[in-house]
Length: 176
Image 1 (cartoon, helix red, strand yellow):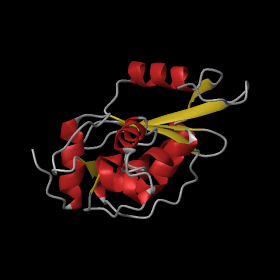
Image 2: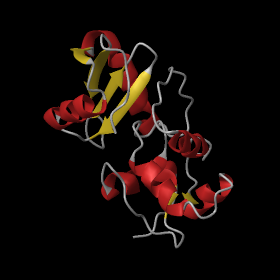
Image 3: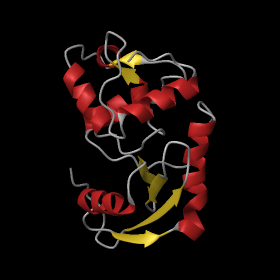
Image 4: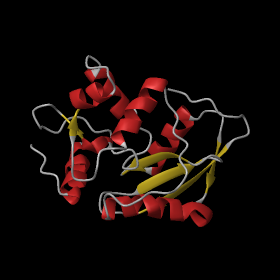
């Protein structure tokens, strides 16, 4: 999905290492708009160009590294407050799903069906899963806390091993 932004918009990018692979962030004038885990630089830049086609990518390592550090800190200390401004772009339904995900406490999980029920859309389980897959802000929007109804780990844009590792760091007991 391509996201509308001003023709002259600039995204500042920064990267920091963490135990689960590099944390890469992109920051717009409005706030944090993209976070990725373990992605190569080339793949990250290609994804940003696809999602934000009318923007310029600028190295923000010197000026925005603290943003990437803040995301990495969420991995190190799950459940901590995250006070940086967010520029969350998606459809109205995705926005609703992501808002519910942000209410799931560290160490707890919900099934896709439970998220759908919280949205008063109990038949939207598949749409919830698609919204989780489209999550632009790894860890900040904790889609890793959404699992199958039988407790199994299913799909995670940044890999099931990372999903398992994130949940274990939070004290959850994910099934295989």
